[in-house]
Amino acid sequence: MDYKIYFENAVKGSRTLHLLDKQKVNAVLDALANRLVEQTEEILAANLLDLERMSPEDPKYDRLKLSTERIAGIAGEVRNIAALESPLSELISENTLPNGLHLSKLRVPLGVIGVIYEARPNVTIDVFSLCFKTGNTAVLKGGSDAEHSNQALIKIIHQVLAAHEVDINVAVLLPAEREATAALLNAVGMVDVLIPRGSHSLITYVRDNSRVPVIETGAGIVHTYFDISGDKEKGADIVFNAKTRRVSVCNSLDCLLIHAGRLADLYDLVKALAKKSVIIYADEQAYAVLKGLYPADLLFAARAEDFGIEFLDYKMAIKTVADTEEALAHIAVYSSKHSEAIVTEDEVQIVNFLNAVDAAAVYANASTAFTDGAQFGLGAEIGISTQKLHARGPMGLAELTTYKWVIRGQGQTRN
Image (cartoon, rainbow, N blue to C red; front, side, top):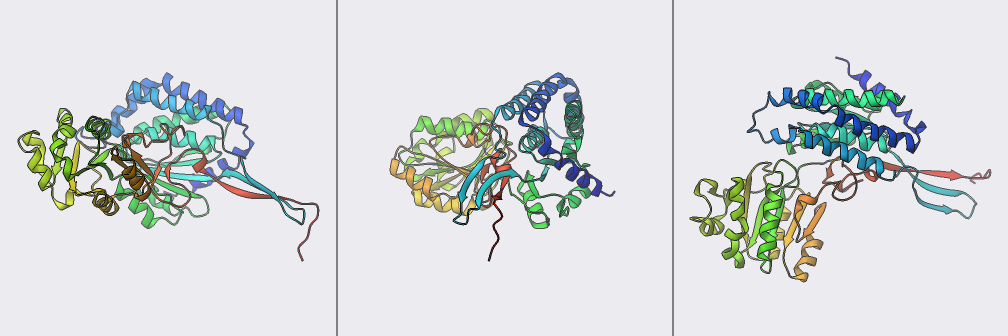
């Protein structure tokens, strides 16, 4: 199949977006939110076709699954995006040179944004909404696991766009087959930036093979360090929430680091995890403390390879450290630079940890589950960037823009 037509259509659609005023953009998004709720049954029927092809034991099953409540939540995020102020045409800076030239630095769309993602149909709506709000065309490449769900959602998007007389090519869904991914990776001159969302292997593959500029997102190998002065009740709540709120997302806890001086409190920190049947891989010291207390069928001696894993499942590793410096050293080796946390009542250790950890989001005495565009007040996010160039952390509206220089003169010429 020749996929070039998809990209050509996206470019054509992109050229029409500057004609839309903010009121029309918001009207489209509000109408989309309403249509999603109205067509919940149709969406769920399509989603069921996808779910029937995946084992419920697959860690991706929870990401794939839609429900009436989840669709309502997706619609709510679309409304949140509509209500946010658009960053487009924001004046970043301005200056008048001695020669009279007036320079303005203005925020503008990136252009055509390609997003490759796996079994997460909500991404289809999130990405379109964020791109549309910021004047970008979205080229969507979902995984085959969510093919029916994505087709149902893009159909709704196109219906709403057509009803508002907007070119439907501002939202393009590529076929689910792998060959479409290869075409997207090579769409130089038609796609301006590519954003992979999903597993570490997907992100690595895209980064290593794309000829289109890439913003890395997604993979989260997340730690929480319980310090010598940590509050036990806070720590237990934070660990339970970060690990079990939703295990299939990238901000969920993968490894608990505990100060050796607080091992006596370890069981109290993790005992609630047994209610969710969380499997623990504990190092030698932690294992000795938990043996006989934590359920035997859920407790295993950690191997070296159990650290530095994004579990995306009801599993967690535990590592004992001598002090904050050893915790920082462990994080430096194993972190994916997504989200890291410390639980402590010592302000000196808080400042040390927050300054020393190299990650997109760093927490003191709070759950890493908050690393999320909506929670940060950005509306839905297009992903969590774990790199340092252009964007870092939850990518909301502003992160989907670049800037250009606008120069006004009165006939000046240069010697």
